[in-house]
Image 1: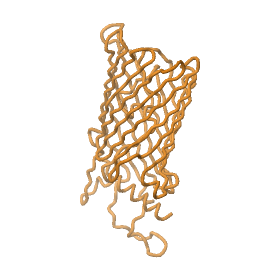
Image 2: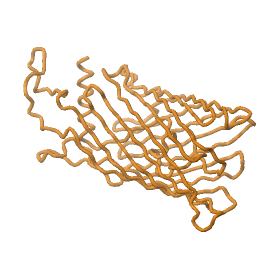
Image 3: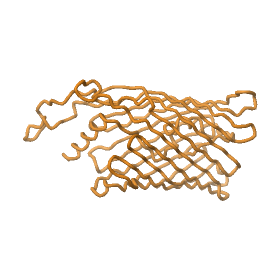
Image 4: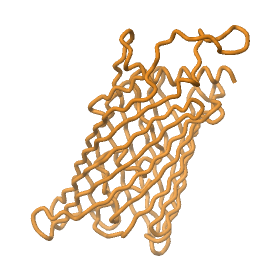
Length: 348
């Protein structure tokens, strides 16, 4: 148990004081505004409410990393020039809580998105969306639960006082992002979309040592660039193939996700459907490059409700050291008042 606690403390303080990277989801389109602000309002309906739960580190640490997401967005027809315009104005909000219980280490994020989807022509189902996002990142940790090497009494407990600098246990910073997304529906069987997001361009300072004068106390969150492309192609009467590509670069870290879902529908393809998928995550971190995880996926869609599950089978050096950092993810979504206006986005 001792080495695991030490590993977790080092992880928390190291990444809490250095420039870091974001939470990564295996079902990125469920909370679309987190992936790209321009995905706000990009769905077949009037309102969308989604939630995700992700946990990782079971078996490697004495406590798991847990992430909760709740998001909602709503859209309005925006008659820019005349009553026949198909333009859309959308507003979205999401909240994220990422936590490790044993130290009350929490990261809370709340962001508000405003996106405008411009129809490119009156007869074509093409849209270009531009989204802006702003919000707050809040971090806190319980200092009373932390132990350092100079506190050990060399017998059986950490009872001595520490000379470590007093870190800020609670702070909040502003955060801002931009995104663009293009989607086209050339026919009833095909939907194509591609976009790019530039997030954290204000490089918010996320250091727990922000108030210390004798150490480096300004460590901005790396700006993140995300490029993603998706295709929904109805290859048979009740089968839709959905390939996905996502490339993320954030400081020295890179993540390339390649995969595809297959949607098997009922006679009424908007009523009941099963989703199957598999993706491969290729990652570059501080000291390695290679396949990070294989992620199978399964989802069920019934009318306006969708449930999805995925599991990251980690293939990096953590497996060789018998540290299971696999991740489980569960999502639930609801789409209200569905329409057929052609402005759609991948579900998972």
